[in-house]
Length: 91
Image 1 (cartoon, rainbow, N blue to C red):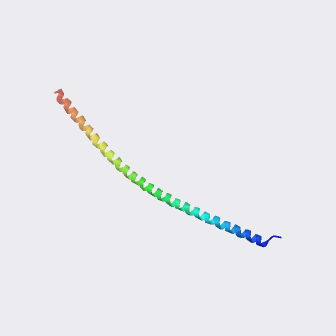
Image 2: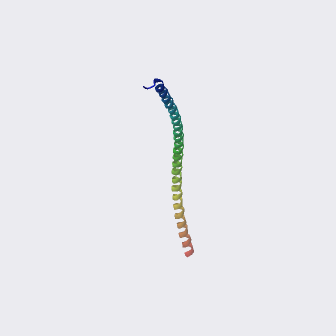
Image 3: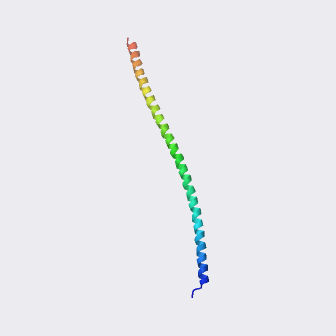
């Protein structure tokens, strides 16, 4: 025959082990949640920095376009003045 007290002790031991395991899992879950929060904060910061970089890149492109236009105007002026100087030198 089975010993009812032994079965009860085994059941209590199993329940205690199960509770301990549940507590350990709860700690792991909390740690994972904190890591997730930290990573979400990091991602938000990186996203904001990328958005800022994209905005700066737009300004740089606009500045480059403006400088390219000014360079073309300056090159045209140099050609015009070179033509005038050659005409003067040839005369």
